[in-house]
Length: 376
Ligand SMILES: [Zn+2]
Image 1 (tube, rainbow, N blue to C red):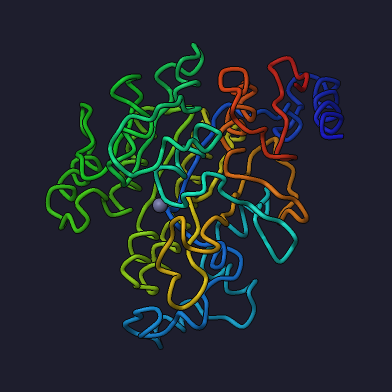
Image 2: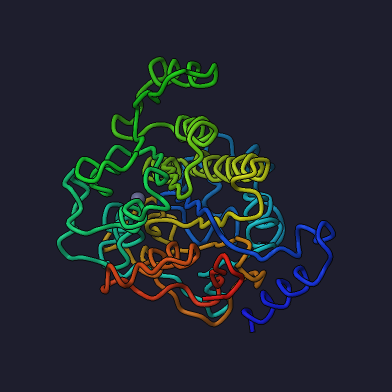
């Protein structure tokens, strides 16, 4: 059905005299994939916006309840979630899809059983949970990630990168072995000549309080991303944001909400800047997700891990030129382990051949269209 739509669009474009084909008639294909994670950001806020019980001094550690209510509380879940994350709801879900809305019979879950960060990111990028990946220690991943797989292909060599708040990511991607570009934590962004934005960024890396030693503020990672994309134009880019998890562990619901809201605005600014570059415009897909959920009551919302009920529930949003605008997916169960092969499949590449333990791609997020217009 999809294939036919694409072929129809392609044939229409080919039958027009040269020069009259409009952009929307061109064969749609994905040449670049951007993956963004919001560490430990709950499906409760993603689908329902701010939670009333947590906009509270005790349960949420909220400093100014009145101001936080004014910023994020609205009468309906739809209004609350759009207030919290306007770009994700209006643009990503508006033009794409989101999995994991349990009120619509849709689940998205981690399968690794551990419900914390390294096992979650490993499942996202390797395509399966591995019991050997059982800590957040800086040990090289025993398995190949889809980023390493793509970077080995001639078309993507040196065009795959990760920019992340957390300094464990070089181990998750085992970049000391495969030489993937992984910018992580409180590290200045190298590369000459330095732009003014890069100089300012590196001054902030030095001068800002390194409040969490192993985890930079999201702003550092957001700015590093903008500078890196402008300079290096990667085809596959992972951006790992971390403040949602940090503030939740600190029981600061106000700052957790702010981190989510600013992450959303970063997605908007990144997407807009990509659409202004010919390498990306109209041929870039974006996947936004998280590594694990958290608890669901006013006590354990701050926490996650093996013993926390519900922390296995996540959400996955996808948008791109080959992804039909199905919006909120209903009555479908997906897993975190399906993301790795989806990243490759969107580009028309087969990660399953290299990593047979990986789960199948997410259903219905798009077919790759080869250069000659044939779907595969
Ligand atoms: Zn995490």
